[in-house]
Length: 437
Ligand code: UDX
Image 1 (tube, helix red, strand yellow):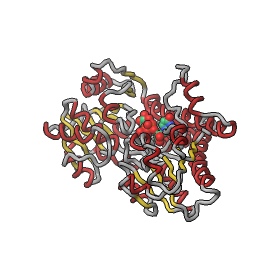
Image 2 (cartoon, protein in one colour):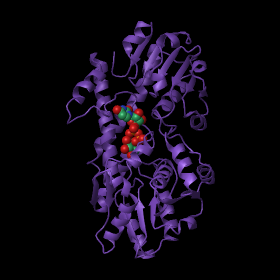
Image 3 (cartoon, protein in one colour):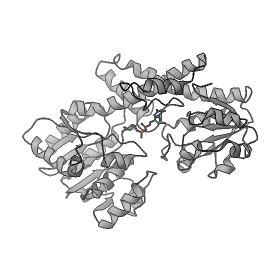
Image 4 (cartoon, protein in one colour):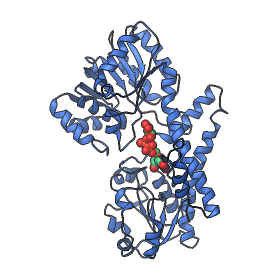
Protein backbone atom coordinates (compact mmCIF):
# COMPACT_ATOMS: atom_id res chain seq x y z
CA UNK A 1 0.00 0.00 0.00
CA UNK A 2 1.01 3.64 -0.44
CA UNK A 3 1.35 5.32 2.93
CA UNK A 4 2.41 8.71 4.20
CA UNK A 5 3.57 9.52 7.72
CA UNK A 6 3.31 13.16 8.78
CA UNK A 7 5.85 14.02 11.47
CA UNK A 8 9.05 11.98 11.82
CA UNK A 9 9.93 12.27 15.51
CA UNK A 10 10.21 9.41 18.01
CA UNK A 11 6.81 8.10 16.90
CA UNK A 12 6.68 8.91 13.17
CA UNK A 13 10.19 7.82 12.18
CA UNK A 14 9.71 4.43 13.81
CA UNK A 15 6.22 4.09 12.36
CA UNK A 16 7.39 4.97 8.83
CA UNK A 17 10.32 2.53 8.93
CA UNK A 18 8.16 -0.22 10.46
CA UNK A 19 5.42 0.18 7.83
CA UNK A 20 8.06 -0.08 5.07
CA UNK A 21 9.35 -3.21 6.82
CA UNK A 22 5.83 -4.64 6.54
CA UNK A 23 6.10 -4.22 2.76
CA UNK A 24 4.37 -0.87 2.16
CA UNK A 25 5.62 2.09 0.15
CA UNK A 26 6.09 4.86 2.68
CA UNK A 27 6.94 8.54 2.52
CA UNK A 28 7.75 10.29 5.78
CA UNK A 29 7.13 14.05 5.81
CA UNK A 30 8.79 16.38 8.29
CA UNK A 31 9.26 20.15 8.32
CA UNK A 32 12.74 19.80 9.84
CA UNK A 33 15.20 19.52 6.90
CA UNK A 34 17.94 18.12 9.16
CA UNK A 35 15.70 15.24 10.25
CA UNK A 36 14.70 14.52 6.64
CA UNK A 37 18.34 14.53 5.54
CA UNK A 38 19.41 12.23 8.34
CA UNK A 39 16.56 9.74 7.80
CA UNK A 40 17.07 9.82 4.01
CA UNK A 41 20.71 8.88 4.59
CA UNK A 42 19.51 5.90 6.66
CA UNK A 43 20.63 7.50 9.93
CA UNK A 44 18.30 7.62 12.93
CA UNK A 45 18.15 11.21 14.25
CA UNK A 46 17.78 9.83 17.79
CA UNK A 47 18.82 6.73 19.72
CA UNK A 48 16.33 3.90 19.31
CA UNK A 49 17.48 0.28 19.33
CA UNK A 50 16.65 -1.46 16.03
CA UNK A 51 15.73 1.72 14.13
CA UNK A 52 19.07 2.14 12.26
CA UNK A 53 18.80 -1.46 11.00
CA UNK A 54 15.21 -0.88 9.85
CA UNK A 55 16.13 2.36 8.08
CA UNK A 56 18.92 0.58 6.24
CA UNK A 57 16.94 -2.50 5.26
CA UNK A 58 13.82 -0.55 4.26
CA UNK A 59 15.95 2.09 2.47
CA UNK A 60 17.61 -0.62 0.37
CA UNK A 61 14.24 -1.87 -0.87
CA UNK A 62 13.44 1.62 -2.19
CA UNK A 63 10.12 1.51 -0.32
CA UNK A 64 10.99 4.19 2.24
CA UNK A 65 11.68 7.85 1.56
CA UNK A 66 11.52 11.10 3.45
CA UNK A 67 10.73 14.62 2.30
CA UNK A 68 9.94 18.06 3.68
CA UNK A 69 7.34 18.52 0.93
CA UNK A 70 3.75 17.43 1.65
CA UNK A 71 3.10 17.09 -2.10
CA UNK A 72 5.22 13.90 -1.97
CA UNK A 73 2.40 12.40 0.11
CA UNK A 74 -0.20 13.01 -2.62
CA UNK A 75 -0.06 9.44 -4.01
CA UNK A 76 -0.57 7.81 -0.62
CA UNK A 77 -4.05 6.57 0.28
CA UNK A 78 -3.48 6.14 4.02
CA UNK A 79 -1.92 9.07 5.88
CA UNK A 80 -0.69 8.72 9.45
CA UNK A 81 -0.59 11.86 11.59
CA UNK A 82 2.33 11.36 13.99
CA UNK A 83 3.26 14.88 15.12
CA UNK A 84 4.09 15.80 18.73
CA UNK A 85 1.73 17.31 21.29
CA UNK A 86 4.14 18.78 23.86
CA UNK A 87 3.06 20.66 26.97
CA UNK A 88 2.29 24.34 26.32
CA UNK A 89 4.85 26.60 27.99
CA UNK A 90 3.46 27.80 31.31
CA UNK A 91 0.29 25.69 31.09
CA UNK A 92 -0.79 22.12 31.72
CA UNK A 93 -2.58 21.84 28.38
CA UNK A 94 -1.13 20.19 25.28
CA UNK A 95 0.19 22.42 22.52
CA UNK A 96 -1.87 21.49 19.47
CA UNK A 97 -0.08 23.69 16.92
CA UNK A 98 1.71 20.75 15.26
CA UNK A 99 -1.49 18.71 14.97
CA UNK A 100 -3.30 21.65 13.41
CA UNK A 101 -0.41 22.42 11.04
CA UNK A 102 0.11 18.77 10.05
CA UNK A 103 -3.59 18.32 9.45
CA UNK A 104 -3.83 21.54 7.42
CA UNK A 105 -1.01 20.33 5.19
CA UNK A 106 -2.78 16.97 4.74
CA UNK A 107 -5.98 18.74 3.68
CA UNK A 108 -4.05 20.24 0.75
CA UNK A 109 -3.42 16.78 -0.75
CA UNK A 110 -6.19 14.51 0.53
CA UNK A 111 -8.29 12.75 -2.15
CA UNK A 112 -11.67 11.01 -2.16
CA UNK A 113 -11.36 7.57 -0.56
CA UNK A 114 -8.21 8.45 1.43
CA UNK A 115 -7.96 7.55 5.10
CA UNK A 116 -6.29 9.86 7.62
CA UNK A 117 -5.13 7.99 10.71
CA UNK A 118 -4.49 10.03 13.86
CA UNK A 119 -1.76 8.52 16.05
CA UNK A 120 -0.68 11.54 18.08
CA UNK A 121 -1.70 11.70 21.75
CA UNK A 122 -4.42 14.36 21.81
CA UNK A 123 -7.00 15.80 24.18
CA UNK A 124 -10.33 14.02 23.73
CA UNK A 125 -12.46 16.03 21.29
CA UNK A 126 -9.61 16.66 18.86
CA UNK A 127 -10.64 13.88 16.46
CA UNK A 128 -14.18 15.22 16.29
CA UNK A 129 -12.88 18.71 15.50
CA UNK A 130 -10.49 17.37 12.83
CA UNK A 131 -13.26 15.23 11.31
CA UNK A 132 -15.35 18.39 10.85
CA UNK A 133 -12.46 20.08 9.08
CA UNK A 134 -11.96 17.02 6.88
CA UNK A 135 -15.66 16.88 5.96
CA UNK A 136 -15.46 20.46 4.68
CA UNK A 137 -12.26 19.92 2.69
CA UNK A 138 -12.85 16.39 1.34
CA UNK A 139 -16.17 14.77 2.31
CA UNK A 140 -15.18 11.48 0.66
CA UNK A 141 -12.17 10.94 2.95
CA UNK A 142 -12.33 9.35 6.44
CA UNK A 143 -10.57 9.92 9.77
CA UNK A 144 -9.70 7.05 12.12
CA UNK A 145 -8.11 7.54 15.55
CA UNK A 146 -5.50 4.85 16.13
CA UNK A 147 -3.39 5.71 19.20
CA UNK A 148 0.20 4.55 19.55
CA UNK A 149 1.40 2.89 22.75
CA UNK A 150 5.08 2.51 21.97
CA UNK A 151 7.71 2.79 24.65
CA UNK A 152 10.97 4.48 23.77
CA UNK A 153 13.75 1.93 23.75
CA UNK A 154 11.27 -0.72 22.55
CA UNK A 155 9.57 1.37 19.89
CA UNK A 156 10.29 -0.93 16.93
CA UNK A 157 9.14 -4.02 18.80
CA UNK A 158 6.04 -2.22 20.14
CA UNK A 159 5.12 -0.99 16.63
CA UNK A 160 5.57 -4.35 14.90
CA UNK A 161 4.18 -6.43 17.78
CA UNK A 162 1.67 -4.24 19.64
CA UNK A 163 -0.46 -5.56 22.55
CA UNK A 164 -3.56 -4.29 20.77
CA UNK A 165 -4.75 -2.07 17.94
CA UNK A 166 -7.42 0.51 18.68
CA UNK A 167 -9.48 2.06 15.86
CA UNK A 168 -11.68 5.02 16.77
CA UNK A 169 -14.16 5.78 14.00
CA UNK A 170 -17.61 7.30 13.61
CA UNK A 171 -20.36 5.35 11.93
CA UNK A 172 -20.60 6.45 8.30
CA UNK A 173 -21.11 4.88 4.88
CA UNK A 174 -17.32 5.04 4.41
CA UNK A 175 -16.39 3.47 7.75
CA UNK A 176 -16.22 -0.11 6.51
CA UNK A 177 -13.86 0.76 3.65
CA UNK A 178 -11.67 2.86 5.95
CA UNK A 179 -11.39 0.02 8.48
CA UNK A 180 -10.54 -2.36 5.65
CA UNK A 181 -7.80 0.03 4.47
CA UNK A 182 -6.24 0.20 7.95
CA UNK A 183 -6.57 -3.57 8.30
CA UNK A 184 -4.66 -3.78 5.01
CA UNK A 185 -1.84 -1.67 6.44
CA UNK A 186 -1.69 -3.81 9.58
CA UNK A 187 -2.36 -7.16 7.83
CA UNK A 188 0.87 -8.76 9.06
CA UNK A 189 0.25 -7.58 12.63
CA UNK A 190 -3.37 -8.77 12.59
CA UNK A 191 -2.21 -12.13 11.24
CA UNK A 192 -0.34 -12.53 14.57
CA UNK A 193 -3.72 -12.56 16.39
CA UNK A 194 -3.19 -9.04 17.73
CA UNK A 195 -6.49 -7.92 19.29
CA UNK A 196 -8.19 -5.13 17.35
CA UNK A 197 -10.73 -2.98 19.16
CA UNK A 198 -13.11 -0.83 17.14
CA UNK A 199 -14.83 1.98 19.00
CA UNK A 200 -16.02 5.57 18.70
CA UNK A 201 -13.35 8.26 18.39
CA UNK A 202 -13.88 9.50 22.00
CA UNK A 203 -12.79 6.34 23.85
CA UNK A 204 -10.02 5.78 21.29
CA UNK A 205 -8.53 9.17 22.16
CA UNK A 206 -8.95 8.48 25.89
CA UNK A 207 -7.23 5.06 25.81
CA UNK A 208 -3.76 6.51 25.50
CA UNK A 209 -4.00 9.18 28.19
CA UNK A 210 -5.89 6.84 30.49
CA UNK A 211 -3.20 4.17 30.10
CA UNK A 212 -0.39 6.66 30.70
CA UNK A 213 -2.21 8.13 33.71
CA UNK A 214 -2.59 4.65 35.17
CA UNK A 215 1.12 3.92 34.67
CA UNK A 216 2.11 7.26 36.23
CA UNK A 217 -0.23 6.57 39.15
CA UNK A 218 1.32 3.15 39.68
CA UNK A 219 4.82 4.65 39.80
CA UNK A 220 3.76 7.44 42.17
CA UNK A 221 1.90 4.95 44.36
CA UNK A 222 5.07 2.95 44.96
CA UNK A 223 7.04 6.15 45.40
CA UNK A 224 4.56 7.28 48.06
CA UNK A 225 5.17 3.91 49.73
CA UNK A 226 8.90 4.67 49.45
CA UNK A 227 8.36 7.91 51.38
CA UNK A 228 6.71 5.88 54.15
CA UNK A 229 9.44 3.24 54.00
CA UNK A 230 12.02 5.97 54.57
CA UNK A 231 10.24 6.87 57.81
CA UNK A 232 9.74 3.33 59.04
CA UNK A 233 12.98 1.61 58.07
CA UNK A 234 11.18 -0.65 55.60
CA UNK A 235 12.60 -1.58 52.20
CA UNK A 236 10.29 -0.51 49.36
CA UNK A 237 11.76 -3.02 46.90
CA UNK A 238 10.65 -5.88 49.16
CA UNK A 239 7.24 -4.28 49.53
CA UNK A 240 6.94 -3.98 45.73
CA UNK A 241 7.98 -7.61 45.25
CA UNK A 242 5.41 -8.79 47.74
CA UNK A 243 2.43 -6.75 46.54
CA UNK A 244 3.44 -7.34 42.91
CA UNK A 245 2.94 -11.09 43.35
CA UNK A 246 -0.79 -10.47 43.52
CA UNK A 247 -1.48 -10.72 39.83
CA UNK A 248 -4.32 -8.20 40.13
CA UNK A 249 -1.57 -5.69 41.00
CA UNK A 250 1.46 -7.01 39.08
CA UNK A 251 5.13 -6.14 39.68
CA UNK A 252 5.62 -4.06 36.51
CA UNK A 253 5.86 -0.28 36.97
CA UNK A 254 6.37 -0.69 40.70
CA UNK A 255 10.05 0.25 40.60
CA UNK A 256 10.43 2.95 43.23
CA UNK A 257 13.08 5.60 42.79
CA UNK A 258 13.50 8.93 41.12
CA UNK A 259 10.18 8.63 39.33
CA UNK A 260 8.94 9.20 35.83
CA UNK A 261 10.04 11.68 33.19
CA UNK A 262 10.19 11.73 29.42
CA UNK A 263 8.09 13.17 26.64
CA UNK A 264 4.89 11.29 27.54
CA UNK A 265 3.91 10.53 31.12
CA UNK A 266 4.46 13.99 32.69
CA UNK A 267 2.85 16.00 29.91
CA UNK A 268 0.05 13.49 29.34
CA UNK A 269 -1.21 13.56 32.93
CA UNK A 270 -1.08 17.37 32.89
CA UNK A 271 -2.88 17.65 29.57
CA UNK A 272 -5.48 15.17 30.83
CA UNK A 273 -6.14 17.32 33.91
CA UNK A 274 -6.40 20.42 31.72
CA UNK A 275 -8.87 18.71 29.39
CA UNK A 276 -10.96 17.43 32.32
CA UNK A 277 -11.14 21.02 33.56
CA UNK A 278 -12.38 22.21 30.18
CA UNK A 279 -15.02 19.50 30.29
CA UNK A 280 -16.20 20.75 33.71
CA UNK A 281 -14.76 17.71 35.52
CA UNK A 282 -11.67 19.17 37.18
CA UNK A 283 -12.22 17.30 40.46
CA UNK A 284 -12.31 13.97 38.63
CA UNK A 285 -8.60 13.98 37.88
CA UNK A 286 -7.36 16.04 40.82
CA UNK A 287 -5.58 12.89 42.08
CA UNK A 288 -3.24 13.26 39.10
CA UNK A 289 -1.97 16.52 40.60
CA UNK A 290 -0.93 14.44 43.62
CA UNK A 291 0.66 11.84 41.31
CA UNK A 292 2.66 14.67 39.76
CA UNK A 293 3.59 16.14 43.15
CA UNK A 294 4.79 12.79 44.56
CA UNK A 295 6.87 12.36 41.41
CA UNK A 296 8.62 15.73 41.65
CA UNK A 297 9.16 15.35 45.42
CA UNK A 298 11.40 12.34 44.67
CA UNK A 299 13.79 14.62 42.81
CA UNK A 300 14.04 17.00 45.75
CA UNK A 301 14.51 14.05 48.12
CA UNK A 302 17.40 12.75 45.99
CA UNK A 303 19.16 16.11 46.19
CA UNK A 304 18.55 16.16 49.97
CA UNK A 305 20.03 12.66 50.31
CA UNK A 306 23.17 13.69 48.45
CA UNK A 307 23.55 16.78 50.64
CA UNK A 308 23.02 14.77 53.84
CA UNK A 309 25.62 12.23 52.75
CA UNK A 310 28.13 15.02 52.23
CA UNK A 311 27.58 16.39 55.73
CA UNK A 312 25.01 19.11 55.05
CA UNK A 313 26.39 21.10 52.13
CA UNK A 314 26.96 20.52 48.45
CA UNK A 315 28.96 23.70 48.05
CA UNK A 316 32.31 23.12 46.37
CA UNK A 317 31.86 19.34 46.30
CA UNK A 318 32.72 17.07 43.39
CA UNK A 319 29.64 15.13 42.29
CA UNK A 320 29.34 12.50 39.54
CA UNK A 321 25.95 11.70 38.07
CA UNK A 322 25.49 8.43 36.18
CA UNK A 323 22.71 8.96 33.66
CA UNK A 324 21.19 11.84 31.71
CA UNK A 325 18.43 10.16 29.67
CA UNK A 326 14.97 9.98 31.26
CA UNK A 327 15.30 6.19 31.17
CA UNK A 328 17.83 3.63 29.90
CA UNK A 329 18.09 2.72 26.20
CA UNK A 330 17.08 6.20 25.13
CA UNK A 331 18.81 9.50 24.35
CA UNK A 332 15.64 11.40 25.24
CA UNK A 333 16.20 14.00 27.94
CA UNK A 334 12.73 15.55 27.92
CA UNK A 335 11.80 16.13 31.57
CA UNK A 336 14.69 13.90 32.59
CA UNK A 337 14.67 13.34 36.37
CA UNK A 338 18.44 12.70 36.24
CA UNK A 339 19.28 16.05 34.66
CA UNK A 340 16.81 17.86 36.88
CA UNK A 341 18.59 16.48 39.97
CA UNK A 342 22.04 17.18 38.49
CA UNK A 343 21.08 20.81 37.84
CA UNK A 344 19.60 21.29 41.33
CA UNK A 345 22.86 19.99 42.83
CA UNK A 346 24.88 22.32 40.62
CA UNK A 347 22.73 25.25 41.73
CA UNK A 348 23.66 24.38 45.33
CA UNK A 349 27.30 25.01 44.50
CA UNK A 350 28.66 21.59 43.53
CA UNK A 351 30.72 20.74 40.47
CA UNK A 352 28.60 18.18 38.67
CA UNK A 353 29.97 15.78 36.06
CA UNK A 354 27.41 13.79 34.09
CA UNK A 355 28.01 10.71 31.99
CA UNK A 356 25.54 8.72 29.87
CA UNK A 357 25.97 6.21 27.04
CA UNK A 358 23.62 8.01 24.62
CA UNK A 359 22.15 11.28 25.86
CA UNK A 360 25.11 13.60 26.40
CA UNK A 361 24.75 15.54 23.14
CA UNK A 362 21.13 16.36 23.92
CA UNK A 363 21.98 17.14 27.55
CA UNK A 364 24.76 19.57 26.59
CA UNK A 365 22.27 21.74 24.71
CA UNK A 366 19.56 21.71 27.39
CA UNK A 367 21.80 22.07 30.49
CA UNK A 368 24.96 23.83 29.30
CA UNK A 369 26.27 24.49 32.81
CA UNK A 370 26.77 20.86 33.79
CA UNK A 371 30.03 19.12 32.87
CA UNK A 372 29.80 16.18 30.51
CA UNK A 373 32.29 13.36 30.18
CA UNK A 374 31.80 10.46 27.74
CA UNK A 375 34.26 8.14 29.37
CA UNK A 376 32.81 6.50 32.49
CA UNK A 377 36.17 6.04 34.21
CA UNK A 378 37.09 9.67 33.65
CA UNK A 379 33.68 10.81 34.86
CA UNK A 380 34.13 8.94 38.14
CA UNK A 381 37.65 10.18 38.70
CA UNK A 382 37.93 11.87 42.10
CA UNK A 383 34.18 12.00 42.82
CA UNK A 384 33.18 12.72 46.41
CA UNK A 385 29.74 11.27 45.79
CA UNK A 386 28.25 9.20 42.95
CA UNK A 387 24.56 9.36 42.07
CA UNK A 388 23.06 6.64 39.87
CA UNK A 389 20.06 8.35 38.30
CA UNK A 390 19.34 6.38 35.08
CA UNK A 391 19.63 2.60 35.35
CA UNK A 392 21.57 1.80 32.16
CA UNK A 393 22.76 -1.82 32.33
CA UNK A 394 26.41 -0.73 32.29
CA UNK A 395 25.81 1.33 35.45
CA UNK A 396 23.75 -1.34 37.21
CA UNK A 397 26.52 -3.88 36.53
CA UNK A 398 29.37 -1.72 37.88
CA UNK A 399 31.80 -3.40 40.22
CA UNK A 400 31.96 -1.57 43.59
CA UNK A 401 35.68 -2.32 44.05
CA UNK A 402 36.55 -1.01 40.60
CA UNK A 403 34.51 2.17 41.04
CA UNK A 404 35.93 2.54 44.55
CA UNK A 405 39.40 2.75 43.04
CA UNK A 406 38.40 5.74 40.89
CA UNK A 407 36.48 7.98 43.31
CA UNK A 408 37.92 10.00 46.16
CA UNK A 409 35.35 8.71 48.66
CA UNK A 410 32.99 5.76 48.55
CA UNK A 411 29.64 7.52 48.86
CA UNK A 412 26.72 6.54 46.64
CA UNK A 413 23.07 7.47 46.12
CA UNK A 414 21.19 4.86 44.12
CA UNK A 415 18.29 6.86 42.70
CA UNK A 416 16.83 3.87 40.84
CA UNK A 417 17.21 1.03 43.35
CA UNK A 418 19.29 -0.64 40.68
CA UNK A 419 22.20 -1.86 42.82
CA UNK A 420 22.64 -4.49 45.49
CA UNK A 421 23.17 -2.55 48.74
CA UNK A 422 24.85 -5.49 50.51
CA UNK A 423 27.48 -5.79 47.77
CA UNK A 424 28.28 -2.08 47.76
CA UNK A 425 28.35 -1.82 51.55
CA UNK A 426 30.64 -4.87 51.72
CA UNK A 427 33.07 -2.95 49.50
CA UNK A 428 33.10 -0.09 51.99
CA UNK A 429 30.57 2.16 50.30
CA UNK A 430 28.20 4.44 52.18
CA UNK A 431 25.04 3.40 50.25
CA UNK A 432 21.78 5.37 50.26
CA UNK A 433 18.69 4.83 48.17
CA UNK A 434 15.12 6.04 47.92
CA UNK A 435 12.73 4.04 50.07
CA UNK A 436 15.46 1.81 51.41
CA UNK A 437 17.76 1.89 54.39
C1 UDX B 1 5.32 5.67 28.07
C2 UDX B 1 4.36 4.48 28.03
O1 UDX B 1 4.95 3.35 28.70
C3 UDX B 1 4.04 4.11 26.59
O2 UDX B 1 3.10 3.05 26.55
C4 UDX B 1 3.47 5.34 25.90
O3 UDX B 1 3.18 5.07 24.55
C5 UDX B 1 4.44 6.51 25.99
O4 UDX B 1 4.75 6.76 27.35
P1 UDX B 1 7.96 5.98 27.71
O5 UDX B 1 7.75 7.44 27.99
O6 UDX B 1 8.81 5.57 26.56
O7 UDX B 1 6.55 5.26 27.47
O8 UDX B 1 8.61 5.37 29.03
P2 UDX B 1 8.23 4.31 30.15
O9 UDX B 1 8.97 3.07 29.93
O10 UDX B 1 6.76 4.22 30.36
O11 UDX B 1 8.87 5.02 31.42
C6 UDX B 1 8.43 6.32 31.82
C7 UDX B 1 9.19 6.81 33.03
O12 UDX B 1 8.78 6.09 34.18
C8 UDX B 1 10.71 6.67 32.97
O13 UDX B 1 11.28 7.87 33.43
C9 UDX B 1 11.01 5.50 33.87
O14 UDX B 1 12.29 5.61 34.44
C10 UDX B 1 9.91 5.66 34.91
N1 UDX B 1 9.56 4.41 35.61
C11 UDX B 1 9.02 3.36 34.92
C12 UDX B 1 9.71 4.32 36.99
O15 UDX B 1 10.17 5.26 37.64
N2 UDX B 1 9.35 3.17 37.62
C13 UDX B 1 8.83 2.11 36.95
O16 UDX B 1 8.52 1.10 37.60
C14 UDX B 1 8.67 2.20 35.55
